[in-house]
Length: 171
Image (cartoon, rainbow, N blue to C red; front, top):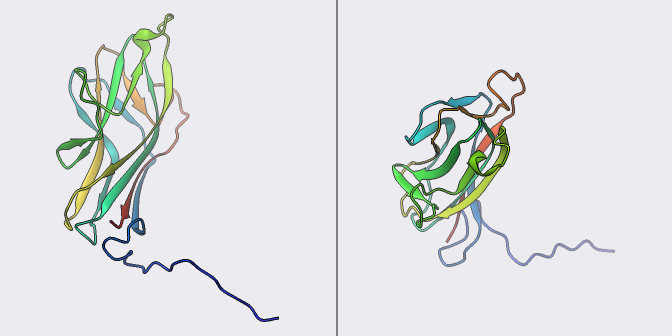
């Protein structure tokens, strides 16, 4: 009996031709293994190490950015996370005062105890460039308690990794 190989399509390494759509051209990932702590209120700050730089091969490509991290906060605080391409906010809500892609709100919890959350977001962006493009995550908080990425609490030795991944998707 003879062997057969049947496929609908083979996508070249450089992605499908323009108009073909959907092929993954390249993937770049940053794995953050250290802890970030923010004790500054009412200011957007970069989460150190939670950024990725990708150089698209085609200016028609879209970039799918995926973030995955754990965060914890103290009592009675609102925490907001947002993503930026360079200095431009992307994928954020537009209807509120502090717009982002995710929030953690221990103010809403009746006991106002420490809140630990898993944050995952995916944003599809159209940078329209073949220049190196950096995506990063920022954090804003109110209140006077710390927020941690990669650790459960300030004096806890448990740590976990965070990731940000950029996928170039051909148009």
